[in-house]
Amino acid sequence: MGRNTLLAVTCLLIAGCGYGAAPPLVRGQAAPAARTAASLGPLTLKVAAAGDVACGSPVSSSGCRGADTANQIEGLRPNLVLALGDLVYDSGSLAQFKSGYQPTWGRFKSITFPIPGNHEYGTASAGGYRTWWGPSVLTAGKTWHSTRRGGWLVLGLDSNCGAVGGCTANSEQGRWLANQLKSAPKCTIAIWHHPRRSSGPHGDNAVVQPLWAMLAKAKAELVLNGHDHDYERFATLDANANPASTGMREFVVGTGGKTFYPVGAPKPGSRVTVQGLAGVLSLELHSGGYMWNFLTTDVKVRDSGSAACS
Image (tube, rainbow, N blue to C red; front, side, top):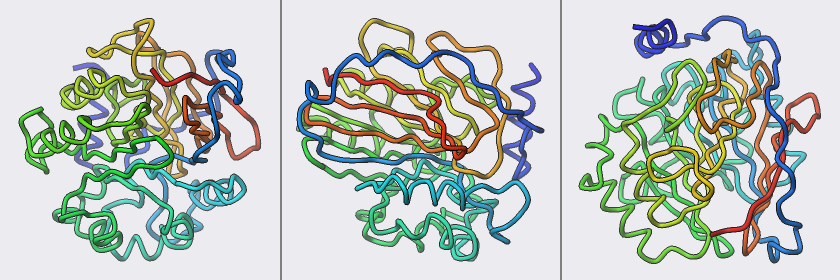
């Protein structure tokens, strides 16, 4: 068992593992702007996204940057906030949502589209998450949901596969996803917590491959994840999550503020990594494509680009 694998397994058992210090480091180069905003059609939605966010209590705990990323989101003035799981530590209890998440990202609750991470399941059946978000998010009591905004289908999936009856195409969640994709508009974005590909210490998560393959077959554009506390952008990946000239683009955005992990050797297809810095992915969703900027809380753009919907 390699060092990164051992660390990942250990930290699934011990809450709050931070993998040690992660000094600021940026690898890779920003993608050239493939499309102008005008060529992508009208702007339909401004989005801010990140995961792995808030310390439970107190808010001012050393190293916690959830308040900083919340202030950053406020400045971006998005229409939609994508909360990529592990929203409050360590166990995702209702008390921790009230003491840690509410004073930071809680101000965006009315425009937030969340999914649970593994820490939410530190409370039985993700009870704190379920109570905090309530029926407006938990459609029919499920932890997966969708919304349609301005020609985009936004899908929120639960990658805690063992807790939800699996992530296969034949699982309840898989069948729901297939039904959503039957009537998908031209542009689709999906979010879940555990990335299919990652150069961070948790690494790849093959358990979500069936969901990935279903989305790729439907020609979805974007998949956003957290879990590894860093930023990473991949090139377009095919249905097997391998680099390809066309396919889905994956972003790992575990930079919401809790802690920061070191990034290892880049996995195939990795284009940009940022470690040791809190930040938010800002997306402009247009009727025919999207533009992205990854902005760290030191007011710097660390990655940017654009692409048309397939």
